[in-house]
Image (tube, rainbow, N blue to C red):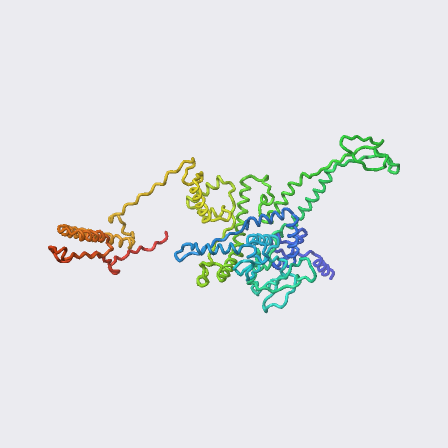
Length: 621
């Protein structure tokens, strides 16, 4: 009995062997791995943090120099001076319809004025684009509302309103919504998370209040009246996150550390020294300024002071500025640049820590990112805006070259457009220009692609037209420059290009059996041959008749006949010549009328030789 009880107690107090579970080492719970938050959806993470992130990001852009620099970099590289537009409407033959394209472009330029495109009448369209991109950087998103009525002097009934993210009622319970829909942070979506409507405050929530504020009142705006621009990292993601969300704390720490170092340096720059005394603190003060009893006094340059017995000078040895501050701040700034998405060199403007190759590699990597954001901005905003604007412009008769009927019957043809985002200049022109020239000659790229990358928003058509106008102006004013294509590099006038001699017509024997000859060329040769035969016959008959008439010497008749003979040489003219039977009471030997008729009969359609058809080309292998 005792042994059974002992064994049972031993089993109870014995350590239990836990079953081993295979898992990722980074996911194992431990004392050092505490603080990891559980996984949640994108909206669940945003709903608890979006307001704070947005406010802190805006404050950093206002106060922190590197945060403001990051915003400038993004806006300048994505938008630049503005994204250009070039209409690409083509004719039925596939050629550009210049009158229609020019009319569309001029109408858009007129609408782009601030009083026409902006509801506030302040922002030109390209300034409007820059403001949009700035809001996307700061707040992670921007809202643009369409107002279908004419503003200013524009004929186009369309204007745009820029709405900041704070005006969306993301922390307010809206009114009743449609069955099956739900409101997520101010955006009403259906069961597929497609936006249906936006709940927008009439005024900014942080606007100063004069009496009863309208910031507490909001309205439901249908989604087809709103463009919501944001970068979607996870789906479904209803709202956008600020681009500084990953570096907010780093920027704040850098700002605080920099301020503390500056305060310490200011204190160290103020030279301070102390007088050390061995007297009893309870005894009367005996100092170099004992007559006033003050413990502090000023020392001027070149002045000597006598110290009291028992006093000594202790000098201050400041250690500021801190020599370790520069490498530490560079480390922090590299982390901030990685969080924003730009290079350290662009954000800091410090090229002392890299050579030419590494700096060039960083800039090229940055430009790939900017090209992506340019394409995103064009397809998310500019392309749908162009379709909306063109429809309103055509219906309002603002584009005179396009009728509403023609536009309605072929929307896709009239909506063709090419957008011209900004490009970037050469990093090393002497090498890159030569490389691009070789690439164009070898067929690896085109001139249009090179201009699009380096032309800062210009395209091939703009460059060619500008070059043509430049050369014409030089020629009119009699000026000669080294850039004239008719001059060599040494300044001498280049020899004119040799005119190629026409190739001899191939002989029938040399023609390949598989070559197909154009039927129109055959018909043309046949007509020329028939014309030569008929002209020769007319000349022969005319010579006989002329000799007969000259023997009678009727001057008027000879003149008339010569005119007829001259006109009869053309193969496509019908000539009727009849000799009269009686001239000045003299009878011609042969009174039979002479009738010469030049007619060329074309072969019937059924008699034409049948075209040879080539076998369809097949791919290799």
